Amino acid sequence: MNHPEANQYEEYAKNLQFHESKKLSSDDRRVVLVDIDETICFYPDKRQYNLAVPNQANIDKINNLHDEGWYVIYWTA
Image (cartoon, rainbow, N blue to C red; front, top):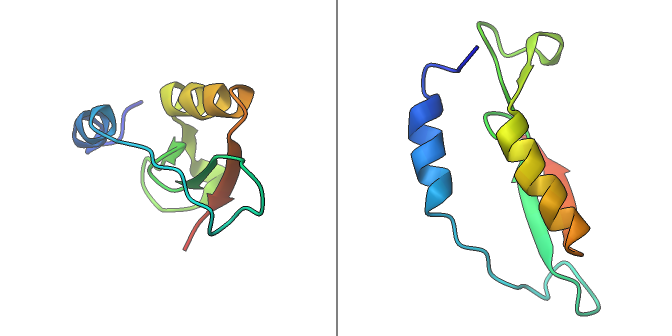
C-alpha cells in the first residue's frame, strides 16, 4: 500500500543531500537525523503507530547509512 503522497516524497528523496555536522557529535562521526512519520512509515488512515505501513526502501537506505558508519538518530514531533 502506498501513501497518497508517496510519489512526492520519493521525488524529494532523490534530491536529498547530506552534510556533516559537529553539533551532535564530539568526534568525527557523521550524523543523520531521521523523522519517523512519512519517512520510514506511512499511515493508511489515522496517524497511529499500530497502523503504520513500513517504507522498506527508505528503511534500507537508512540501514545502509548505518552500515557505512553514520550515527542515526530517529525522531518525531
